[in-house]
Image 1 (cartoon, rainbow, N blue to C red):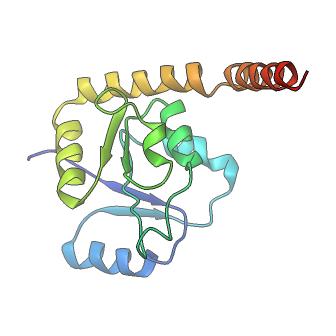
Image 2: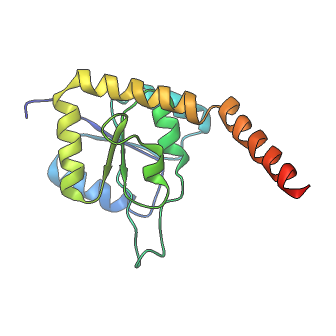
Length: 158
């Protein structure tokens, strides 16, 4: 597409060796950052334009992504998020507004192409994700939901 793209993989996982071999074989520029301290994560998010973690269910649904705090961190950092349709990951994205939920390889490619080709859209989606995190996942909003739930429980118990 004529765009300069560089991938960044943060963290360690069972596919690390395979990903390194594929990147080398395809001569794709990939920066691997493994064993980084938590304090470095904000810096890594600032180096990104797009966050993608296309997780998927494995073993007939026995292995799924949980809520995935990394999706929340990325959105809070102002990045559009591409999440796989696994477990709680889709709950972290407003599809088409703050990012995309993808079901397969083709969906991932399409989402990446859309965002890479349109930096303005990418920025707007990142801003929408940040706003969504402030509204739905700030300490204040979480505490308000907890307070409301506890009040309802007390009311129903009496």
